[in-house]
Length: 114
Image (cartoon, rainbow, N blue to C red):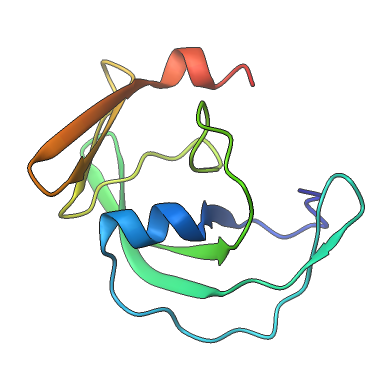
């Protein structure tokens, strides 16, 4: 993603479908990706809660229909996500995503180098 001065959080459409976030808000945004391709987001997931330390901030994610790298399913701009179906432990450096009754934990220290 070429960050043309904008600060956005990206989420692949496939991840949005799996974690059952609320409806997407429409957007007219256009993104230029690192390979110079132009992408039109599917929509914006609004008020997704992000945990930083002991604080929680509502954050919007731009949802884009692209093939996600399984090692890095979200681009979080170094923020940590917490919603009803996801939990971040900033001190342990873990991101746990919950899909139904299953959970998967990612070590953020390992994925941050990609």
